[in-house]
Image: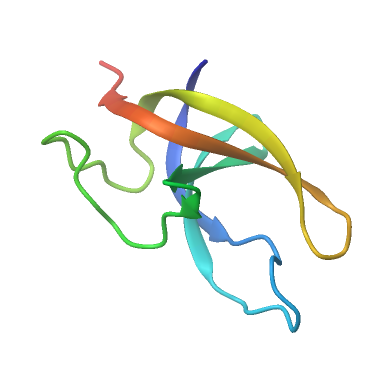
Length: 89
């Protein structure tokens, strides 16, 4: 799947008990966020994607496998296993 939105840091979903607060990278579209993952783990640090280093608020195109998961409270969240991230010109 392909997702176009703003590269952003947002509060991570609660995936442990007790919930460990933090921030994770996501692509935000129309007020909702899809968290970025590599090998099933949320991406929590800025990184280059095949030579492209996006900045927060850049508009990007992400390709990868998208899925819905539930946090420990049963709240759904979106995750995308990243294949590529490219800037939108």
